[in-house]
Amino acid sequence: MCRVLSKHQLIRAFEASFRGLASAWQTERAFRLEVAVLAASIPSAFILTPDAFRRAELIACLLAVLAVELLNTSIEKLCDRTTPQIDPVIKIVKDMGSAAVFCAICMAGVLWMGATVERFS
Image (cartoon, rainbow, N blue to C red):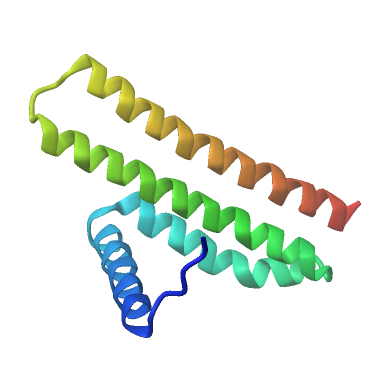
């Protein structure tokens, strides 16, 4: 059953999201770099293609990279909080999170390369 959130609940949810973004911005260099790439890419998407759906796709894939980066950072911080020692199982979990970010970046790269080839061929 779908429940409509109250204005107060929506505001609290937005505040929690903003705190998460602010924390990632303050503590994660990779996140700041990916935000910079997104900021530079938005105008590039408008230059690269006149198709609104294609532009949305190009921007959305970079937002997906940010989302996966945030999830990876969350996993890493939780793992670090669980134990300060190096644990081989936790290392594998962290490596898998890193691999997820890599896959998201590869996806974005493929989409951007495809749009670039489409534009200049």
